[in-house]
Image (cartoon, rainbow, N blue to C red):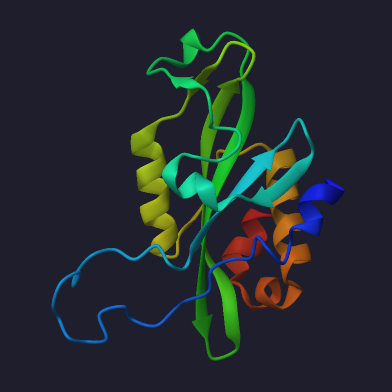
Length: 172
């Protein structure tokens, strides 16, 4: 992992469940989806690194800036593959754990200022992550290993407290 990224570990922490913003009053915002316990992890298989970039929540991560999004992946001439993995943290009787994990593809060609991502896929994967689903079967093995290593290194107790489904989906 890149030492610059790991030095930001404490700054780029996962968001762990916060208090109910409506405090049970049932007024404005009631029934809206909260993204407070979700964090985007960027997986760069070519760069051999994984890191949290909270700006990805609004398509403003460093890899997404200054590119034009195209609807056809074939229009991105020399893409570099990245994954934005939507990681949701929940708490159980044993403490916090990685509850939902769903990876979404992102193709970026910085020199040509072009990029491709399926917005419907990203939204669906965010929703699945929020619902505690594990969606990583479409990711390559190297990217899954980078993700696993990152989650374990980030907080081994949270990893150990996570479901067997996640551990089986992200093997050593």
